[in-house]
Image (cartoon, rainbow, N blue to C red; front, side, top):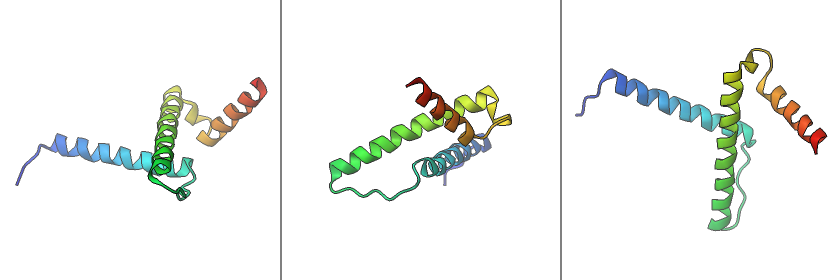
Length: 90
């Protein structure tokens, strides 16, 4: 049996917890719809696009948290306002 330090075990737990939270938020962000594809290439494309969207969503959340905007607004409100600004700019 292998023995690890408390710090090693705690850091592994925190990483897993962060990964699980990211996965749960990605299911929320991507609506958690089942993937309906016909073939491995289509499945790979769908998974790749989901991965990209998760990475972008995680980056947006990191920026929002670091800016302190979560003290005033919800994430959904911020994203909706950004979407409205995009529509006005276009």
